[in-house]
Length: 322
Image (spheres, rainbow, N blue to C red):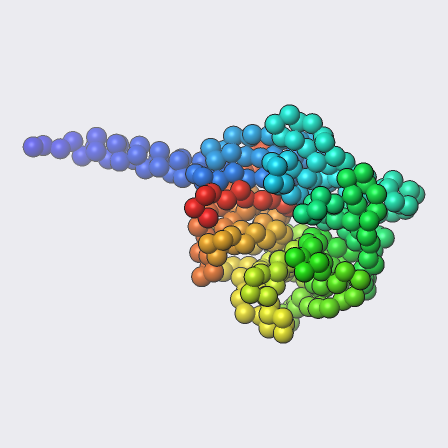
């Protein structure tokens, strides 16, 4: 049999081009079995993206630093620094809202909200930067609890980033301006504190991968008692024991082909993997990654058409296998 090698070469080139195009398309959207709730304040959009990359639901926003997918399928998020809403994606209706600029004695005061959480009892926890407090409100917005925060470098924009109430009734607070994680008990006493290290480097301004600091974004308490910390402009994730020993460290350039910039959200998965937010890293890098503990990227989300370089918050709706 005689072969037309030029024809074979053309066919091979066409197949390679198709494969590269498919790989690029897959790289810029969700992988099969993934739904993603994501928000980008530069694109002014919060949306749920289905496993095929289509938008299931979206809503306009101004500023955002937190979001939560509720058990009933509703989305709790903010449309600006002070206004929090609960939306039913199936109807688009706002079924609950709260504005910290006008509620519970805040009229005329400078306040920003960078963290909130719907609690199991139906109340909502809200961290108010500028006023330096955590409060819990009921469905009518009535104040049912508050504690004062310890803040060394007060700033309405930087007092906190993410705050989470733990099963112990304590609060785990990422203090961006102080470069520290603090755990508060229900009375407001600090029961554990960890200063995020600069690792011998001098701080550098900016938001992209060339910046440097310890302006952490999130802290997650693990089942083993350790704490995962997204170090923000420290471009990393660290796991710290109760004795403040670093037992795992994902650094800026540990992932082949990926540069970490402002590391934001943390989502530990039941399979042991970790989903992290990679904000301000530029269009050559994914905005969300799933990594293994041996530092392999097993899934990534990159969409610079509908989102931008300020995709600060996300939640990956895990598949049934996880």
